[in-house]
Image (cartoon, one colour):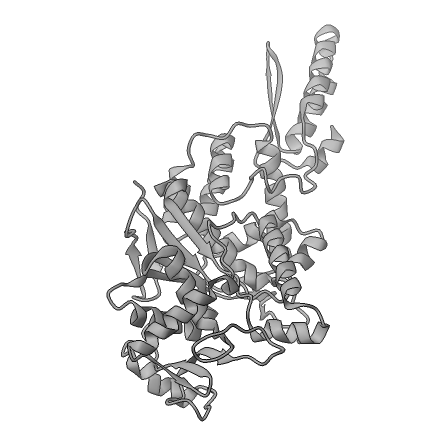
Length: 454
């Protein structure tokens, strides 16, 4: 079996991945807060962990991997959007979830096994909060319930911070009902115009952090294999998840491996509306950038490094993908991906290394293995096909060259055959001529535009 090694944020080491149960490998990834279109940065963890999901399915079997990614559909940003637009909160969240799933599908992301909405797990959140209070890790105050950070000695280990340092350097809300400035909200009161649920502490709604602890426990158990997300979630969200979950289930280990992808830049700068370089996935798709191109650009940079989106990279990715799709059109995939591709992915999702291995397959002209290997990474799939790839059926050119050869055999004038062969070679087409006929094969430098000269 392929050995997978992953960088564990918790230990800051690359470690051999050993699932708790190889017959049920479990992964949880934090999903979006659904109040608006997903921007390009939101899409990076989706693509990163989609590749990991595909790798786990390849190694352990599709029926032995459970992947959960949540939707936060109760949040102050959603409430603000409803107040701003006058629209019903349910309509906003349903619409936004639909947008998200549609946009991520266009990037080639498989849907997880479970996509829980926070509002579907309120009873589980309330039960976990009650348990934390009973165990002395949380307290009720003025309609709120807060987690007592000082009650969990390991708080801050994931992000490498001490509580005292965090207090000194952080801008945290110091509400009068907090025992400690770093204590965070598990439950807060709701007014009549905001979403709310009945609870032992009055009508209210959950804090952000408790939802993932409750949903991951319900869907994957108290201990599971991998927890992922962007590194902007490491603190406070993931730090708070660990504290809640480990205090609620002290005999369990919660997530064994923590993985965080780095952030995205645009043309070398942080994406922001003030710089005018902020755009959503849908913006790019509507501008004619294929989802497969976006995915290709993402995978060209290791998930642990900042990724820079540039128009040049997108153009280069599109050119490569057009050639690959033309060369693999109508070809049956190989039985297995190239070992070099699988090994690169198994080495902490080394997608740049896997891409280099794909290019090596192109140089060898091993199109069946290229197809299978690329599909392991979510590229060259049927689902992502049809994005204005020019018809590169070479049978017409093969027929014309065959006719020219027959005429040349009779006239002994091979000038037209030589001209056509030269034009095809210049277009990156391998010309194979035998007694059986003419066979044309797109090569690694195939350029459909140059066929006009044939």
